[in-house]
Image 1 (cartoon, one colour):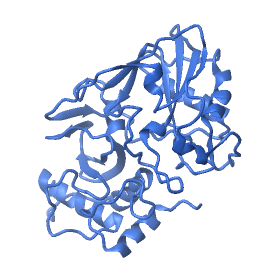
Image 2 (cartoon, one colour; image 1 turned 180 degrees about the vertical axis):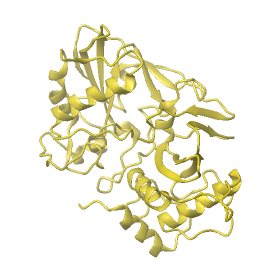
Image 3 (spheres, helix red, strand yellow; image 1 turned 45 degrees about the horizontal axis):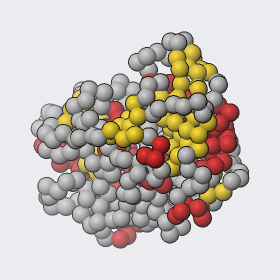
Image 4 (cartoon, helix red, strand yellow; image 1 turned 60 degrees about the horizontal axis):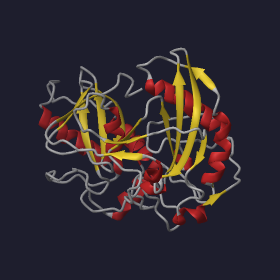
Length: 352
């Protein structure tokens, strides 16, 4: 099945007559714009726009916010409303809000982060030019918060045993079974960040078999404060073992979107899970597989435990499980979400 381009989604919305307030089911194959395509459309529509008045003066924040939303409507094929209702989020159908940022300190007022809510974060230069748009969901945004200002986040504990290779789930979740296969061919053009497709998902058992040989392997440790770079090194190894000819990571959940596979590299027992429990039955922001819409509990998790001496990271254990079976193996800690203003210092490379 050919994947729709960003322009395809825009044209479908244009011809539908839908407004930004018309509800759309997550993953709807016609009108729900997947996050990657949403980001592409917003970049095309907003990049290089100048957010100033006719005299070349910086717009007040409220006016700037309204202008940005107007540009976003045009970019996605929606009619511009006469006024923007105070809904949460403002773009109800596509489940996203816009945040125009001159600083790297993101502020979210009077609401909690929601795992399936999307946040279009717009980078603006000092002279009021839109540079870039990045779209992330609440789950991904929560993982960027290193200050603890958002939440005590869902967490679990990994206890290692003498068994260095564990397949917790002998098979995928029942609804996933018609869509997985023990052997698939990945074309050289296939990206690990592509949308998952029915018949092109490796079975969880095959994922386990392909990744098991990584136990015992080592790679350079970029430093104690470089967890994301450590994770990137592991992702590259995993992509190669799964059969991809390239490595790519767009910071989305799950990490290897094409295989509905989330990767965790653990050098300590505490597993950070963000805002969503792996066992949740809420829908994923991915297209449907035939008539089935994948849920968070259908995601496959691969956890590698590792030791580091500050120079090299050595993988010592691998554990593979579905989200559905996650807490049959790992002990859950409780997480509590805080209310009030949320402030998230965005990483320097957030828009890179």
